[in-house]
Amino acid sequence: MCHALQLRRTSAFLFLSYLFSAMACAGDAVTVCVDYVAEVFAGTGEAGYSGDGAHAQAAQLNNPFGIVRGPGPEWALYICDTGNHLVRKVSADGRISTVAGTGEPGYAGDGGQATAALLNEPYEVRFDRTGDLYFVEMQNHVVRKVDMKSGVISTLAGTGTAGFSGDGGAAVAAQLNQPHSIQFSPVGVNEEFVELFLCDIGNHRLRAIDLKSGLMRTVAGTGEKKTGADGAAFAGAPLNGPRAIDFSPSSSSSDGDAWLALREGNAVYRLDRKAGTMHHVAGTGEKGFTGNGAAAKLATLSGPKGVSIEPDGNVYLADTESHSVRMIDRSVDPPVLRLIAGTGERGKGEPGPALECTMARPHGIFVDGNGAIYVGDSENHRVWVLRKRAPGE
Image (tube, rainbow, N blue to C red; front, side, top):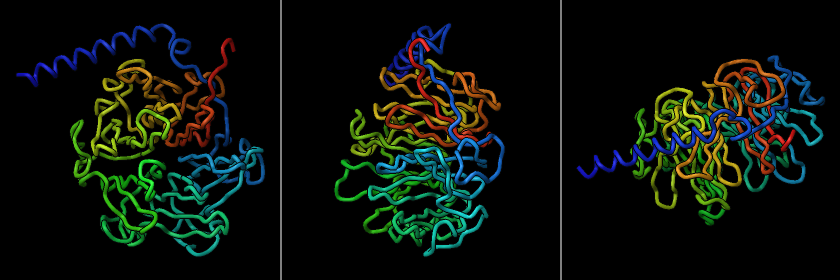
């Protein structure tokens, strides 16, 4: 009886939040909510592999996915050129080059130069604290590392064969199944070691590699295609398609928490790593494109496959099957889902207002420290940069 009453109260509260948020954004979602301009950062819009040494806007890409800012004063941006089986780099002067892969699919080259190695669909790219580069290859079922001083490539995790094995043992001997996303645990949560977390989506698990010992473990997920209860302990809880992961910055209110986008689950969860619990933040679990400007829990998502946390703690999503970029605004309580770019319809957009820029299954997303949002508009073979429109512009 008390439980039922609490559920009715919670539902009423969320409905009122939905109503008031929708009223606040009604009529002019661009000016009242968030207003961005879309600019081409890389890619001509035609699939191909060309342009190394030239400006990135004149280069051809093929299904760009993961994106990240490199370390140090160089200020380069790194892109998983997934359909070309490459990792590419755009320098501060806008010129593009290849840092890993030959353009041919395969799994070879460990111990040699990364530019001579064969990759197979790199999905996401990250950097550790020493400046070395890591990326996950979905079709090879591995995580690989490039020593950025020597340029030598090696395998960190996975055997090259799909499966599930190896927890408690060396990550390089463990089996993965179509891993999609990787991210390092932030400094400050556990000063003794840093782990590389990975979304082992084919196994419906979130796993982690201890970078000191090289050992693999499962953090959450049981292999079942369902999701654990809101507020439950995430250890031993099932996950339905954990597709993308990022961590809250140390300066935010949820210091060190993991944010997990569930592709099949059409939802976003926050993993409180200190308490060991999982918390439902966005998405009803149903696939759709509703609820922009309303309480995030009442909105529908459509196969989110990219997540990035900005410095103030807001959560940005590449909502792939709705061809859009959406944001969980955590400056209000409960959090509100906002539309940042796209219309919800597939298309081939042009530079201009981001809310009018149609996209085609965006996968990668990265929010820079200055607020710029980089989006891998995968099937349009472009990377966009979204910048906030200046007042009066």
